[in-house]
Length: 122
Length: 159
Image 1 (cartoon, rainbow over the protein chains, first blue to last red):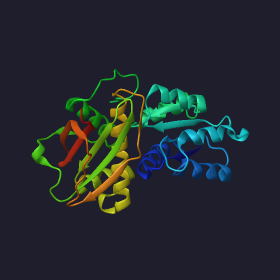
Image 2 (cartoon, rainbow over the protein chains, first blue to last red):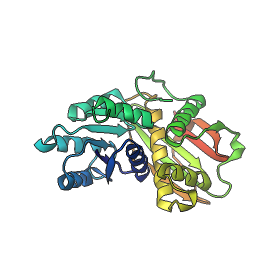
Image 3 (cartoon, each protein chain N blue to C red):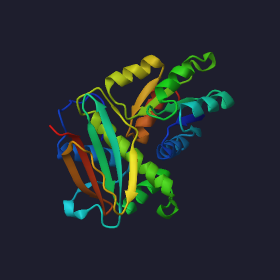
Image 4 (tube, chains in turn cyan, blue):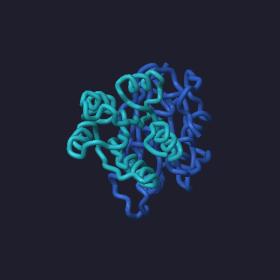
């Protein structure tokens, strides 16, 4: 299984990479939405893309919208992982094409639960 | 312990609620225990670091996290899963920024909204001063974690 973690914080990328590794994923990383698009163009489909919201250059919402315009990625699961916890933001992300939403701070169990709901694991 | 989601919002957080916010973030991301401590415990004994994030929208203010270089290094070691001695300076700043971001996001979920967070900023040094003109502290937590000081403060526009 392959995961792409998109977050401008190296610390969060390290935490997610470790949790995903323990769940059997090989993980690629990107520091913003634009880098993520480059990774997707080069590496193709991932089993799951985890996306922060607040990032420089291209934010997570813009990334989700951009990815959903690409027919080859329209069914790829994209999980928002963010501090933007208000219902208005959740609805905005889901409407834009995010598959589900995980609030920061998070635990490995919470991440696993979301991956199970999305049918990515188990 | 999760403090996000469908929670009852309040006009402003008090110190007990702010401590709950801190405990939630520390527990989930660092698996470390936060305990209340007297203000005299810290934070600036041998320099300190401060992270700041603005809350903008339905509630407007600033959340700050001040701690010691030793704790910042420990937190980075936990998040990067490396030995404290191996932590690089940019990893410390990144970790403090993200912890501040998560504190701000968790606090924001409890305050009137909708609001957005700014990108976090982090400063480090022995003699810096940081002021927020026109703002006053509405909640402050003095705490310790792993024997090191933490000060979390929430400021808003002076009424």
